[in-house]
Image (spheres, rainbow, N blue to C red):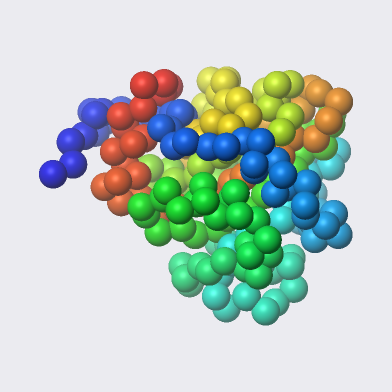
Length: 204
């Protein structure tokens, strides 16, 4: 039986998750990726500077499609996601994802350039309360990042896994001199995921 650790009426803005992560190994994976595989974010009105994405999982209908569809057709998908071939060369990311005991949807690397910012916005119904959760794992550049969700700064650091309530207004500012790269995972909420979010010892 799963024990709930939070009152149902409490909306969690963010929560650090107890998921071990070898951040140096994740960084090795990222370094191995060919820069040409990255796609500039298509929603250019949502950010200033440089923001690009590299899809690791995609909806099955887009497995052989152009990378732009693999990266940005998330809201139009049928919910059946599979790893892309690039995952065969990313053993540390594979190892980290193997801990998840819930269905994975979109999985991608997201890179925000030095001095760039993502403007305040909401991702409709992307939160624990609506059955879908977004997890961020900073791999590099978190030291100078200001990641604000629902008016609360999220103190995420490299190698930590954080649930972020994307249904609330959120924004990101990279005050540093190097790119910030996060592994970003969208998951279907089940009892396992709900429990580790609600039982977090550091949540807001």
